[in-house]
Length: 139
Image (cartoon, rainbow, N blue to C red; front, top):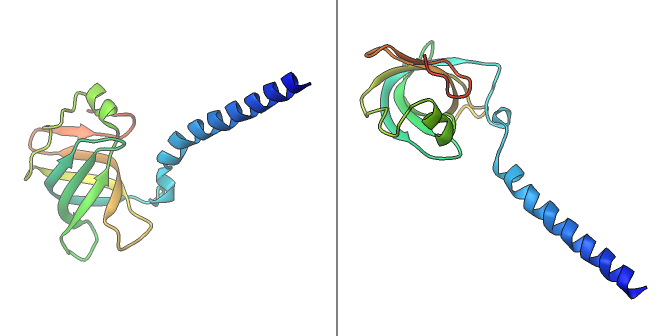
């Protein structure tokens, strides 16, 4: 009988370890809808201040104004896609330079005092480059 109890105890410990290990990635990633108003879109025009090529999502900092806003210049942190998606789309870490003029469309943050937005679409008129959402699609 002790052999059966040892097997049950081992199976229980293994199950706890497996559940603990599987929960870590789930907690690390989030739904965009938790932070952003996904059904709304704002348009921002300005200049690239910084491009952070990092995981889990690259971030494009844009110093600009929101169309229809109060004309106040802000620095927006536009959360984009992962580095692996950027790589597949042929977008290297030096793709954006400070001062590049761009226009972005993004989901605003649920907190009106937070300038983080989720990037939906963008264009750089100087060379005609466009990104239209999806999984790193460029056009």
